[in-house]
Length: 345
Image (cartoon, rainbow, N blue to C red):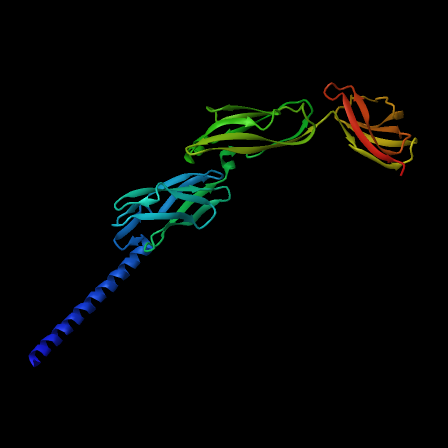
């Protein structure tokens, strides 16, 4: 009996030793799997890996939305289900080609960068998140160099300055099409934002003539030249501002008159200053029912003063009209100054 008890004790001790060794081996393996999961993502049956942990978009034209693709491979024995592709900023989106990845199979991860709010060299972090509870998210990096659109065009803004009414003006925009090809775009066309702007693009000379027709407006203007670009994944347009001021044959001040509250039926004398671009211009105030005894005096050089008596309507209430000056210039035969007021209380 004593011998049997001794054998049982020895067997129990050996069993305890074997169990402890097995437990230590299990703990070591769990620690090793946990370390791998932080870097490449693992399941209990194997690992998951990305084809690259750093996705470089290269040089990107600001406003473009380029797409890059990387490969995710399931080296484990169990299927993987991708929950989402997350970026640590609102500068892009990601999606898998297939969410379910069978063992020893791969899927593409599509990454789209939104560069409208970015500038310069950037580095962002992204994550692949899984539905599998025992698989930790895989972390990767996104890098890019965001270039402003105006580096491809010279000048980046066209300033025509003061333009005489009716005179067409021309400027040139140089296009660096070779640099555009580096960021994945080609010129699809150059057009004006309105009929006032006409363009002629020469691909061989890498430039576009911009012509502004100054006979359809007066005063300050702000137009643009629209450059249409075609890329691999999308098309986009870049606006080159066009600014200037169209000066007529004469400028009248004030441009608008408010006569205030006046008595019905009375006459109000107003005075207009007229600055002529050409000293040879002459003026005549058009006779109308609301005008009496108009007088034009030449003060000095190209500056005139028109003194006009405006007759107020006999009825009470709001009234309005306009004072018209006729010139001997074909380009601007008529200059009009609107006025308004209130007759009575």
